[in-house]
Image 1 (cartoon, rainbow, N blue to C red):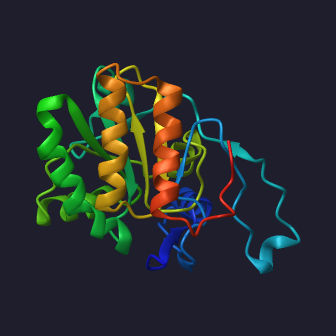
Image 2: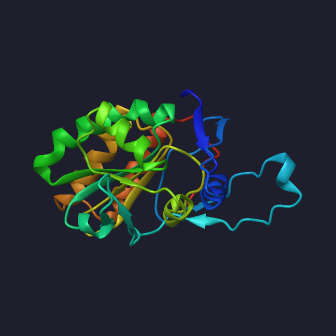
Length: 234
């Protein structure tokens, strides 16, 4: 089993932002029961805390979108950057936070992916869910070379646009036309990255179709992780 993942309660984060503060609830949760999911997959909402279960309204089941949503988020300099800017490239979009341990462990791998695949038109983009000063400090201290965008007050909206809620990290892989090829929930590992990138390159070279790439990636990850029998199916 992979180490336990850290989860972020984004709803609480937004309430805190609205009140002038910034509250990060760090919840320890079991490793997610799903690894990669194709667009259209229905994701059940996370269970509400026991204390709030009686009063909380039922959340709708979310779906991973077919295409990268039309979001615009500020970069480290505060300039708005639309995700549509990355159309025409193969792209990896990683949702993370500086306080998230598995997120931090991923960064060297993401840096390596960005370096090794840059010549093929591949772009790594980080979307950080935290205070801009904290993100900027961490990015500088760890010499993060790929673009980092910040979802602070609109953190929940940004995650929900990809069909997600509270699990960090998660990583979206998209083709040059902006189609979501697959979404990886939890920490990305080198064997998973190699398999996913291989499928994306085959798609990019016209050796397979989008549907076939999605299917082969899902089947490949299932072979790597046969202990996930309860993962939702598309």
